[in-house]
Image (cartoon, rainbow, N blue to C red; front, side, top):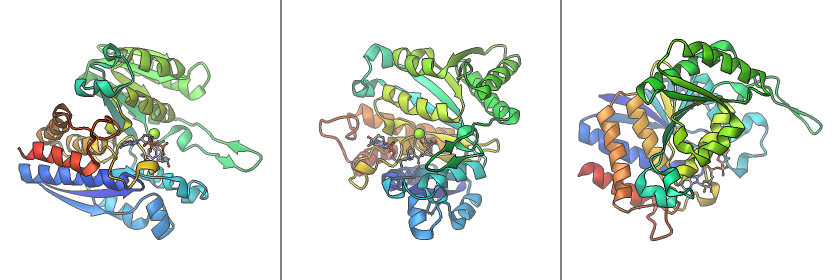
Length: 352
Ligand SMILES: NC(=O)c1ccc[n+]([C@@H]2O[C@H](COP(=O)([O-])OP(=O)(O)OC[C@H]3O[C@@H](n4cnc5c(N)ncnc54)[C@H](O)[C@@H]3O)[C@@H](O)[C@H]2O)c1
Ligand SMILES: CC(C)[C@H](C(=O)O)[C@@H](O)C(=O)O
Ligand SMILES: [Mg+2]
């Protein structure tokens, strides 16, 4: 099969980790007889510097002509004080909104070879396997009015019925393919959007009688995700709660550098991005963990290209490399491998 992929490295460690994902995809293409055409474009701070726009037209045009997008990360101190339209993160938010990528899937899997890197006790972290389904194009990230001046600031958190219904449907679909358990996370004791969210989840539940649905308040989930993570299978939540809970859940696995994500819409088009950010303090040093970006590439093969065997081959190579005892510096202090050297081990496994 031939596929076009727009690669948006972005800023900080974005380039190092997307470079790793691209070489892995090239190895997969060679092994399975596919052709992936990569088109590299600017987004985020790099695009602000070059084009005075965090999401230049050429980037949008390339994404429109592609079958999927692979993104590194955007942002950093250099652009933090820019006016809102010229902030690096705007490039990412506009991409998500413009391409209607409403469903953000963030799997959190604790594998036994990495348990020693988790600060949690082994019996708590062991065998955790959950999927965070985060609404990605609504809520407080995109609310108007939005206002900021020296005296006053306003954010608004709107959600419409159709916006909630489609993400709730997606969560039920995913739950049906997994263990038929959903925890819907909200703040219904305070927020009107959460009360509508709860109502719609309850309505949809009637269509999926086999799925066990639990509502839990986000503050309580923030605690239970650490004390009893195995209680969760599918976590369904709105945009900002999902952002916060996914970074928190990464702790269970051992590192934020392990968490991939898929940002998809209904027709199969998607953007694939690690959950982590640009990690400015380690950028350019060949020490970032590329696993999250490589696993995001595997999600691209699954969700956009329907290449399930190829995706599995990437996952096996990544987890096999950990089993072989090779780790980057976020996971071990004992002779860690660099980003490139660790990726080379993954390639060797793929090519074996
Ligand atoms: N999707 C994205 O583009 C995205 C996501 C999150 C944050 N950001 C941006 O990134 C910038 C930095 O944000 P932050 O510091 O809060 O979060 P971050 O995710 O960049 O870093 C948090 C911590 O995790 C470590 N870390 C992250 N990824 C790693 C990896 N692959 N390997 C090893 N260690 C890793 C960092 O060194 C740091 O200690 C900000 O501008 C933020 O807006 C972008
Ligand atoms: C960079 C930022 C806008 C983004 C978000 O908040 O969605 C990031 O934290 C993420 O998790 O993808
Ligand atoms: Mg985040």
